Length: 487
Image 1 (spheres, rainbow, N blue to C red):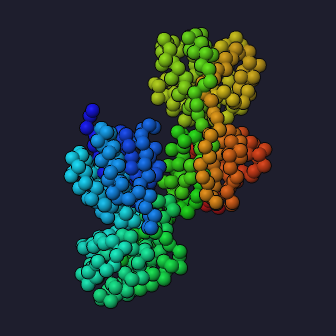
Image 2 (cartoon, rainbow, N blue to C red):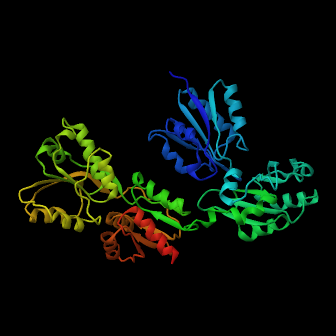
Image 3 (cartoon, rainbow, N blue to C red):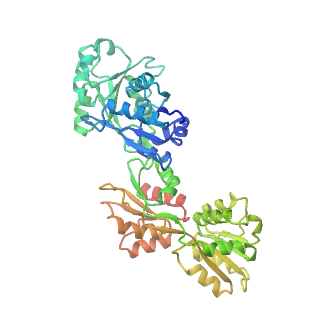
C-alpha cells in the first residue's frame, strides 16, 4: 500500500479565487477533504467526484468535531494510504491551529506538507482599502487573537502603529477599553470587517472609542477581523471593492452546474453575490443509435448544424468513440452563437455560417441564401427542443436528420435559495420552466432573460422580464443587468 500524506491547505479569506495555484492542484488530487466552516465550500467541487468530504467546522460554541477527533481522522485516513487535504480558512499557521495538527502528524509518523493561504487581514486589506503597512503611516503590524483579552499585554500592543485582531468581535468593547487605558488615542481610526473578500463583505468603521457601539448598531456578527490604526483612514480613497457596479446585488444563476462558471465569474467580478441554483442538468442521450449511425455516414451530409456548445461536445465524444474521425467530415458547418462557434473552432474547424442573431429564426433567414433542395443536413441537439429549424429546412427541400446528442433534465435535488435576491437569470426556456417547478421566486427578485424566446417562456409562466440580453449571449445578459442597474 502506498503511504498516505496530509496536506494542510490554506483556502484563503473567503473569495474562492484566492486559493493558491498549488492548493488548487492538490485539492484536485485529494482522496479525502476535511474542511472548516471558514473555508469557501465551493472549493469542494475541485476535489474528484469520489473523494470523501468531511465537515469539521468550528463556530463559536458550536464545534462539529473536536480538535482531537480531527487529528484522529487525519491520522486514520493517511494510514489508509490516502491523500488527505485539511482545508482551512485563511492560512493554516495564523491562528488556524495548523501548528498543533502538523505536530500531531509528525509525532504519529505521517508525512505532511503545508500550503500557505491568504490570511483574513490580507484579504481585508485588499478588499476594504486598508493597507496594513504604509510608508507615511506605519512599518509595524501586530497580529493578535481577541477571544481571551486577559492573555494579551495591552501596554505593548497599544504602541503598535497597526493592530490586527482576529476573533475579537465579541470582546471588542473590552479590547477598545484596554487599548485606550494603555494609552491609545480614542480617536484612532478602526474598522471591523465580516466575511472579508466575499461578495457579502460587511464593514463598520469608527474611531476606536466608538467602534463597539457602531458594531452593535450595525448588528455585525462573527466571523470578523478588526484593524486599528491610521491606515484605516485611507479607506475612503482606496476602497475599490465597494465601488464595483453590482456591489450589494444578489444574483441567482440557474444554468447547469457544469456551465455556470463563466457567467458566475463575470457577475462576481462586478461585485455581485452569486447564488448558484442549477435548474437544469445536462446528461448523455438515452440512446445513441441514431447519432452513431449518422456519424458512420458522416461523409454523406452537406450541412452540420450545431445549436449549442453541448451539441458540439457530445457529438465529438461519440465521434471519438466511433471508427471515424474529423477527416470524414465534408459538410459545411453552421453554429448558433459565438460560444458554439468557439467550440467548433477549438477543433480547428471553420464555421461557414453564424447567424447574425443567435436564435433559430435568424439561422433560417441565413439559410434562405442557399440552395437546399435535396441537401442532407445533420442536426445533433438536445432530446427536447423546438421543431422550427428542422421543419423549415425540410420545407426548403432539405433532408434533415435530427439526432439526440444529449438530454436536459430537471435536477433531482433542490438547493437552498435566499429569502430575497436582486436578480435571477434564465439562459433558456428550460431553466425557466424547471425553476418554477422547483422553487418560488424570492421576494423582490427581478428577471433577466438571455433572449426573446426565453422571455416569451418566462411571460407564459406568469412572470415579468425586467432585462433582456442583446446580443443573446451570457455577455449580453450581464450587460443588460448592468444597464438596468445603472438606470
